[in-house]
Image 1: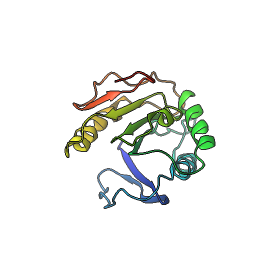
Image 2 (image 1 turned 180 degrees about the horizontal axis):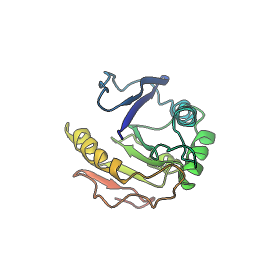
Image 3 (image 1 turned 135 degrees about the vertical axis):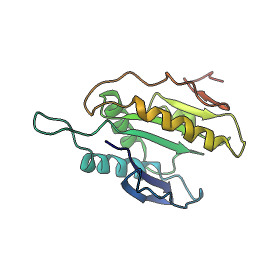
Image 4 (image 1 turned 45 degrees about the vertical axis):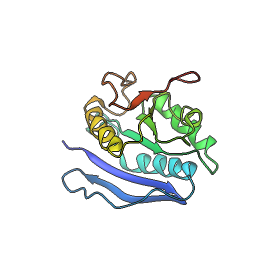
Length: 173
């Protein structure tokens, strides 16, 4: 058994910059933040790729583990994102995948991220190593995944890294 990774960017359009690859063969791609925030296009691509690539368990087939999806944003969506967000949220609620939205910076629109998933982590840090701390924390969450189709409680058992907090809605720190 192994972990597979894929990266979809969503600046000026959604782009698959790294197809689903086993972790031992994965090479981190180079990309930069910039452009608009085409979140709707990325959510549609995410749904299509998971539907195509994730194998569900059955009596005849040993399926994949439930995908863990991290959505990282530094702003707010600039395209038609509401319909795909509702679809992602509904599938999260049915236990199809685990979704965690992560917001960085002063321009992040947490209210829009909460429409995708109730699990929103915000950075209160502008330190250069904040992303590295998040990625270390995120790698621990992979062990909390479970089989596709199995309902699991939201994974908040691992405290967020320094400089991050869970945003639970209006009035959150």
